[in-house]
Length: 191
Image (cartoon, rainbow, N blue to C red; front, side, top):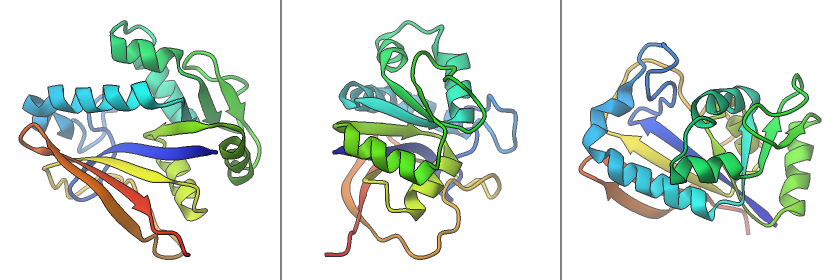
């Protein structure tokens, strides 16, 4: 059975919107505040990509990554560009970021089937709306959060409201460089 792994960059106050400043929203570009930690951050994400079996994305994230990664040629980009992709969308016929499969039906049913059919890690980058749906329906198996030492005070928070608490257990904590904290949580499932 596949595992859904959510991998996200966040500010201390939970904003995941526009960390690089490429989307032009306020307060974008906040990940540059930890620029000296970028090498260790990139190593951690390359390692994650090398161990992933596929990507699960929302439509907007698929488009965003396609514009930025298809022209890149380093080891990280080569891995991500070749990796199988599953894109949740009711409006497109095929993914923009290379070859892949569009999941156009009911998100919960489609992802549940996908988890049953595939082995290995399905990593979700960005895709906030998709992540909120997956969390709401207990389909996330692990949260991998890169937390930057900045409180933004504005911006779209990555985790939205849920119908109830989603207890998590911390299974890993590591500082990358001097400032970025890599936290891994797994859901606490009822016994």
